[in-house]
Image (tube, rainbow, N blue to C red; front, top):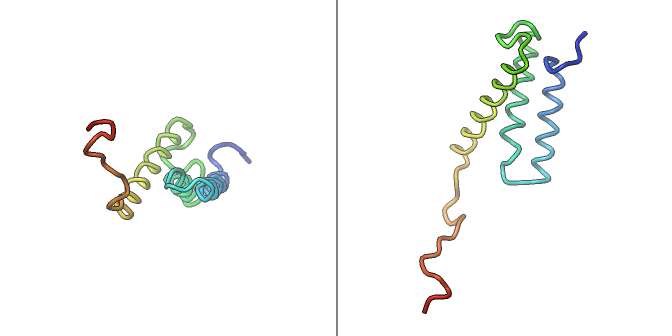
Length: 97
């Protein structure tokens, strides 16, 4: 049995660890990566380590993880969005009179 990057439970454990890290550093920083890792774990669980198109290629697996994480982040951004009034825009300089 291989204990490398293609083991499904390692991806799931990494996703859970990133989700816990998100609780410590809020702001949706790690949540996209956590969802991407959980999706990779589910892909490996359902298809098996050699059954996916990523087969034995670590760079292709990392690329798939990056794409899944970006898609998860974009979906969260679309659902949650930026709240009105979250940032303050200054229209004049306090040093000007």
